[in-house]
Image 1 (tube, one colour):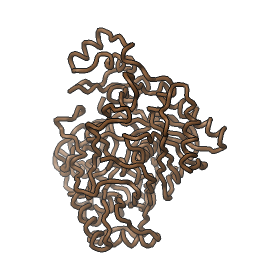
Image 2: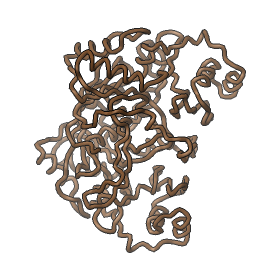
Image 3: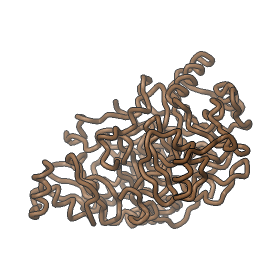
Image 4: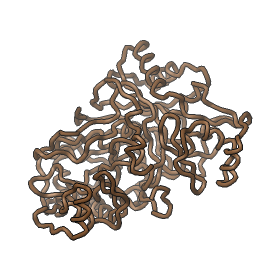
Length: 253
Length: 253
């Protein structure tokens, strides 16, 4: 599959209202799009920050209700962390990849390698923290299907989080859940303009879309959604699992 | 600095002509922009694949002229590589980070951690390979200044390459050289809508811009340039060195 060269737009969607548990998130997103005099088109890609998914799906946890295990207390003491947060990180993880200088890098139950199992206290009211959605691919599929039913539009959905990475400073937005597109564009075996095989084998297009969307989202205001328009892609099945390198293929685990 | 929420455009720029050594690359880019009935605006960000910079700056090397060292022969034999390519990788690198399963991850002389020191055989005629530009920040600054002189437009320039990364499948486009913007957006100490400090400290906005541009570029056709328009940023000094995590701060080196 080749991504064709066309003019692409990134359209930020503000949401005036904070999202709460059991809210119909799809309805909130559609009304926000409408309020901003925008409309979804076929083949748009709707990019959504995971935080509002976590909120709508009740993945907020009050730290007051967390009883840390002995292991959590021990890690917390050693690395200067809140034992309740460490407890949640351990519960959300398959294994610890590295703990150093107060940074806890884990492999989450989904398989993502990230700091603190993606647990986040910002942009949440009170003493709560947000866990990552349990199954971000399902969340994406649900929203995609609802949008199809309610608007007739066939779109793709990407759910994002902001991850740090080895070797490079700063965090970037990546895809942690998706529906309706392949996250990797496969160039293997294709030939360039000179007939040579390409060095690049697979582009993580879903991560690049997540990063593009972040440019329009900002971090301080309520802009948790963006529409990517004009990108040519095949509207087909896909899963964020394809973006996760298997442990045995990873040179750095 | 906050990135404001505005509609952002990614405009691909095709170049009909292959780039050769000593070509005036800025002139070629400006004429390609014109041919496509586009124009540069103040505050546009011009994103350029490093390959055409390498070509214009004479960073193509014929493999026929490379005499591998004993060390290059030894690594090549052990890992099933072309000893001439290994020789070039060693010459372009400060140190080897990891060699496994035929993948040579190095720290380049610039400080980038990437496979094969960024050396690439695709989209090049004949028996040549392209090395990364010697100083991509200077290359970016030169193009930026020429554009200012020739068009009066004050833009930023980002030079990109496509890097793999640990933990995640697929490659993404990142910034390896830049001029006219800060590559990191600093959120440290800022507070969210609930008055809490943000988890995210720094966003690698230059890498996100590089990734966004890639979406419009493709890999098979001659679209090595894209214009990013509508992104609010401070037109100021910056260097791709800010994106390189220092060895001593890196948990995975």
